Structures are given as structure tokens and as C-alpha cells.
Amino acid sequence: MSSLVQTHSRSLGSLPTVGPIAYGLWRFTDDDVATGRALIETALDAGMNLIDTADVYGFDWGGTGFGQVEEILGRVLAATPGLRDRIVLATKGGIAPPTPYDSSPKYLRAACEASLTRLQTDVIDLFQIHRPDMFTHPADVAITLHALRVEGKIREVGVSNHTPAQVAALQAHLEFPIITNQPEFSAVQLAPLRDGTLDQCMEERITPLAWSPLGGGRLATGDDVAPDLVALLDSLAQREGVDRSHIAIAFVLAHPSAPIAIVGSQNVDRVRSSTAALGVTLDRADVYAIVQASEGVPLP
Ligand code: NAP
Image 1 (cartoon, rainbow, N blue to C red):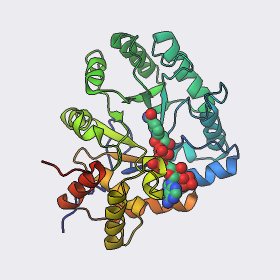
Image 2: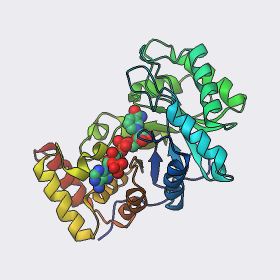
Image 3: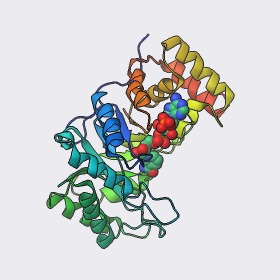
Image 4: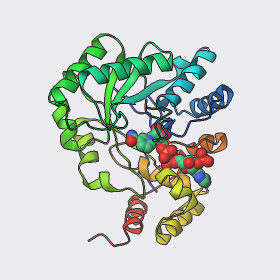
């Protein structure tokens, strides 16, 4: 049976190639450097060399914690010689609680420079606009990104949670390509299949970074997931000799846009075993069965 699951490394512009599974630090709030180091080294050893964070990670929406995850990561990097060089470091700016979004030139530059300081690094490999600021003209966003790149503070640019039209509007003002878009995409979040996000990625050679490939854990626990979908994933897992969560990751990797799945477990064994997804075979009938079980209706 030929597999749709794309296990090759992904090319991201001028950056070193990255594995098809990335490691995300949204839930990385343990203040202990040794714990953080163990998680990151586990991910790197498993080939997950794109590490995704954001300046807002750690913020508790009660008003504190902004920058906390970057700050912990910065301490891990500073304490571990050679670690920074093994990582393709992705972060995001542009969420400015409680505004909530700000990509104005002054704010975005300050956010990027603050990320560099917290991360204790000279350059961010992939700087992403976390969410679109609908009240900043994309030309102004582009001018800021261009300047940060010329100054050597960022290497490549991506976006997150942008509609295809928002990506196109920013790209129209940028002299270099947007190389990633980061949508939520999983067996319980299929919108990017039909809203143009993944089509645009293929059209423009943008790599999708799929956030919450396990639906934030729901696909692992089965909570709040259609029972037919859980049963199908379980039967595929049994056939493939893996866990249900590995089938869910493999489903994300099976789209022809060659997404990168960003897993977010804080458990070293689960981080390590995520790569079992790369051994999974899913054919066209399997992925369409997942879509139909997720939506609860047959495709026409
Ligand atoms: P996820 O991999 O879908 O979910 C991770 C969660 O699933 C963790 O709480 C984990 O718990 C749980 N889990 C995994 N396997 C499990 C199992 N076998 N049994 C029970 N629970 C299990 O991803 P995510 O953390 O939601 O998001 C991943 C990354 O995507 C984030 O770190 C961030 O980089 C990115 N993200 C981006 C945006 C954006 O707006 N751009 C938004 C959200 C996330 P344990 O820790 O206990 O394993």
C-alpha cells in the first residue's frame, strides 16, 4: 500500500532543513532549566529541530507571564553549549494583550527585539506574525519585517492564523517570500482543507505549520471527539501498531502541501514517540475515512 504520509525533511527558504514534526513550546511553563533542556534535547534527538514558540506564551490572560516561555527557553539555550546551533528557532510577535493585536512598526520592532533579548540569541530564524492586526496596513508590516531582516535580527518570515487573502496582502508588499503559515489543522480541525489556506500554501510554496495536530490533546484522550472518529483512529492504530495520536499526526502529514505537525506534549516519552507517526502508512481511503468520520457526514 503506498502511503500519503510525507516523512521527508522540509525546506524553509535559507534555513537549514527541518523535520516533518516540530516541537512547540506553548505549554512549556515549567521554570526548571533541566526539565526544559530534557524536553528540547529529546525533541532534537528525535529529529524535531524546528522549535516553535511565541512572545505571548506563558501569558495567563490575568495580566502576567508575557514572555515567560521565551525567557525559560533563553535560559536553557544559555546553559547548554551548542544547543542553539541545533535549533531552527521560530517565534512569533504581534499579540499584545489586552489590545489584542499590534503589528504597527513601532510595536513589532520592539516585540522582536524583546524576543531576541529573552531568547539570549542574536537572530530569530523564523519570525512569525502571530495573528493578523487588521488595523495595520500590510505595507507597514512589510517595511518592519524587511528592516529587521536587513539588520540581521530575523532570517525568514512566516505568518500564523492568516487567511489566504491576508497572506496575499502582506506578500504583495514584501520583497522576499513568506515561507510559512501556521493554521490549526488536525483530524478535528479540517477548515484549512477548504478555506484556501492549504491551497495557497501549495500555490505559493508556503510550508504549513499545523498547530495542535492532536487537537490540543483531545485526539489522544478521545474527549469531545466524535465516537466514530475515535473508533476509526483506533482501528487504524491497531492496523499500524501505533497509538491513536500517531495516526492523528500522520493524517496531518498526509496532506500534499507537506505540512509540518507541531506537537506540544510536555512528556518526554510522548515527545520521543511522536516519531512513530513517520512509520504509519495511510492511503487515500484512510484519509477520506478520517475526514468523513470527523465531519459525521459522507462526502458527496
Ligand atoms: P497537541 O500536540 O495537539 O496537544 C498537546 C497536548 O496533548 C498536551 O496537553 C499533551 O499532554 C496532550 N497529549 C498528547 N498525547 C497525549 C496522550 N497520549 N494522552 C493524553 N494527553 C496527551 O499540540 P498543542 O500543545 O495544542 O500545540 C502544539 C504547538 O502548536 C504549540 O506548542 C505552539 O507551538 C503551536 N500553537 C500555535 C498556535 C497559534 O495560534 N499559532 C496556537 C496553539 C498552538 P502532555 O503534555 O501531558 O503529553
